[in-house]
Length: 408
Image 1 (cartoon, rainbow, N blue to C red):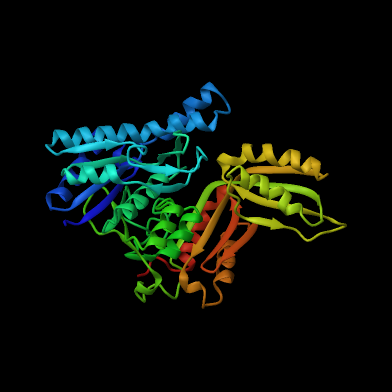
Image 2 (spheres, one colour):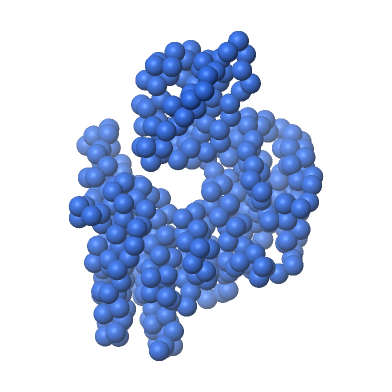
């Protein structure tokens, strides 16, 4: 049986019809080498943002079910156009929606998670020699509603399909050459990494790096699916994601990369009565609404009251305040404040576990660059500081220099 790979093409790789034809030629070359290939595509360029803007012009609060249906059309358009381009080049190809590809999700319409994939239709297309082109980012619920997976969800679609098909590997093709030590748009001398561990890429994704969606990294690690991140514009080698025990010795004793995230909003509940169950009372309804909470800080109690601060995605700020403000009144908190101008900057590296001193170096570099730290959170291989959004470029460059990440 010939080998099988899944290739996912991001929005900037299919932003124009010329680029779609370029992707078609690239997919065709893989097919011509005798390798079976399945394509997964994102919406063209800024299509998703444009669709959201259109919805907001109709209503300030579009219902999730209909919004998911609207947003799913972007990927369907790309899949259809890429299939047309392949057929024009003389190749059999079939465009499939998430429903047709057998992708079943939970009913959280705009932030769904994949429950399972029934890939019989994909197999039928492959068995006829056709190239299946699948609309990423979407699936269907048990009620046969369309659901979408949230930002970056096409990465998750691609990895999940690769797992379901038992593919040899999954390639994530983007407008960058791979995973870098920092965002090259901020740090021109950022270095491309040849290898990175699943643990590190997952932490980078959670910290704001848009190279790979966190759920895609989780699935890849859980099922041992090889993932390669590479450019869609040339054939150069990208970054291979591997298990930690297969990492080269280079990089195991140092910070590997800097990540930043400007999609951050901070909410503070001021003067909360300090009694058991208060934190649960705040965060359980937020979780029930499928809103992800990140940096959480609860101050030391004074006179039996405390402040609770936490961050959410900026796009979730309004929804979160709608939940928190009535809760705060019920709890007899003094006030609820919020800010949509926050950002996170993080250092990530598996070598941080066994080597002390990284936190001090990070805080020192930020201090010397004039960046004020608002709050701090850590994991075994990540340290994240909440800062003002305007300070992100200075902070990222300072940390990249402090840890000498431009050096091989």
